[in-house]
Image (spheres, rainbow, N blue to C red):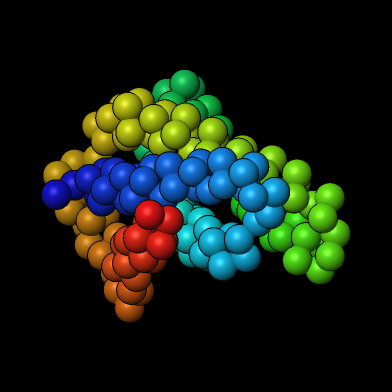
Length: 180
């Protein structure tokens, strides 16, 4: 497997989780209430899996190594754009946490903010992921030799060592079962 393969596998779990978040937005509309446990799980998933584990490998390993390559202007701009999108995602999650605290603290007007932030994430990630999977990863892989890709794969594995990535598959399965 190549490093991009690991990132793309992680993308598939993020996509599945976000489908479930979209379903939760519909339930919020039906109930006119938010589920605190689901929101906390969503924040945990996005902060720790999508951002910490996944974006961590992209930013700290892949993007860092690409900075040493002679990428063309289009690919450099795309990497900067992807980095900026990671920042936007982090900001949206922070705003979601603030809205969640307000809502569960008694400010029911925050329900609309919660829905807005969840909707943003549900719409944002598929576009971001497609940009990486179908364009950026394919174009930039050519900058690395087979040995460099193997070393990067080892770095990805070292990055993930000690992390229970599987807990997020279990979280997804648990929430999926609860929603049925």
